[in-house]
Amino acid sequence: MHKLASVALLVLLSASLAGCGGAQSAAVPPHVRAPIGASNAARLTITIQHATTASSAQRRPQYISPATQALAVTITGPTALSEGINLTTGSPSCTVNLYSNLVCTVSLALAPCPSSTACYTGTFTTYDQAYTNASGGSCSLSSCTQPAGTKALSQAQSVSFLVAAGAANNLPITLGGVPTAVAVLSSATTISGNALTGFVLPMAQSGQVSVLGVDADGNYILGPGAPAVALTTSDATQFTVTPIGTSAPNLFTVANASSNPAGATLTATVTPTTASGASPLTAAADIFSGSATLYVTNLGNSTVTAYDAQGTQQTLVGSFPSLGGPYSIAYDPANGWLYVANNGSDTVTAYNGQGTQQGLTGGWSGLNSPYSIAYDPANGWLYVANYYNSTVTAYNAQGVLQSPSGFSGLNGPTSIAYDPANGLLYVVNYGNNTMTAYTAQGAQQSTPGTFPNLSGPYGIAYDPANGWLYVANNGNNTVTAYNAQGAQQSTPGSFPNLNYPQGIAYDPANGWLYVANYSNNTVTAYNAQGVQQTPTGTFPNLSGPYGIAVVP
Image (cartoon, rainbow, N blue to C red; front, side, top):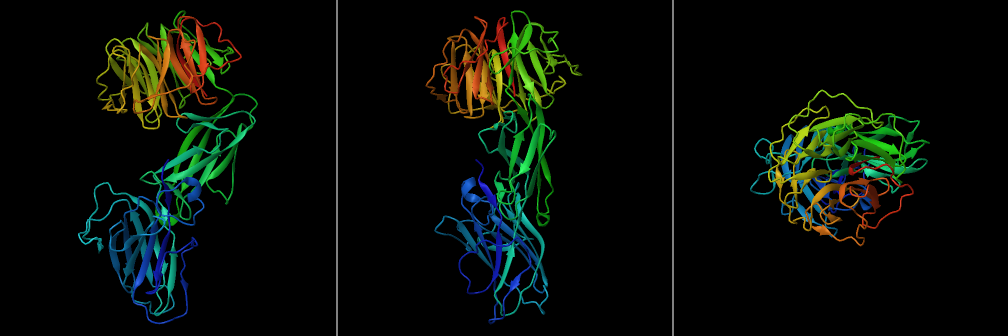
């Protein structure tokens, strides 16, 4: 869970002021009280909230990102200022209050305006890295430095304000959060899946989706100063989107109006406040209705057969031609195509969901006994595990070879899976009963765990609901589960009735794992704990089932 980002800045001009401000209006004009005597110091107070949960954060009035470590202040007017101020524990201006929040109060010397008209213009920017400053206090922006890679978190540009002589001037300034990404999150159990793999919403049901701006340090931007958010659908006849309203500005209700399986694209937009100086961002996520369709490759007769989640065979217009010893199948939600790794012909062929072959411009060069194929939504590449020469090759959607630099340490790789939570690819090695992890460029990653008890591993599937990786072991007819760090997980169920298991796939709509059993021509279903489920259909007409893919 990301830490919650928040934005609130209060400039207070009163030598006797104590504590920190509460909820403030998002408006910028100052509130000026009647003169009560001379005042020489302007005090700027910022409260940096400690980490909190999403629910409790939204109940608080204002926030500033927990990653905040510095503030840049530039003021023009009768007194000109250009200062960098550290906002960290140990800085002279900062203390920790009873709520574990960091409260920083900085004194600024500003001469009063000559009249009752605003005479100052200020720009305030927060950063995620402190300034290099031996005293720990403030420094001139022209002389103090920050580490490379320092990122802006929030900003208020060109704020006009008045400093009145002898007055307690309260100037609420709401910093606008600076988003660098858009988060689209399911907020209801009726909507499964995620923005990377696609959401699934059953027909005639509704659920909630959250849209949030994310700052450069991965914090959600919420509260006054947060970007305005919007969510639209590409097919309003199938999926309707309704904002909750001002009581929950980040929440939207998505209703499935389809009577047949359908799909659409949700487009999320975050529009930062004008004062932040940031630009709008968008993100897209697929959403599907109905139950998933399962596609199974049959090595026995070089076919692909399709089933609903209950094992009832589906009638397709196409016939998946040009297969040659199909081992594995993968789905690319970006174009809606299915890709089949043909071990018998050292090829990869592509089809739409009806089994009609698609023409490709690339030639899938470099294949050598391809066993498995997996899609990485982060870069749009398809990765193929080549058994005979122990390599992994990468391609774009057209089959053009890409150039990742690594993937060392493979030994008879038979399957590959992508983990969207950490962006790593996991490869099972049949040759030495191991699993190895890599970045998208093939740099091998070390894991504290060792992925123990693998035995002739063939298939691998990722379950985003618990973050586990499940491996089908045909050496001893088992399925073993691991976290992303390689520690084996205990499952109360034992994944019974496996018979030389090959492919394994996860269905986000019902949370089941499906396993293709090569020796007895079956597909068996299990929950995440290994307890066998009972589909109403029988998955007929299988012939040496090898690979399996779930299309939400």
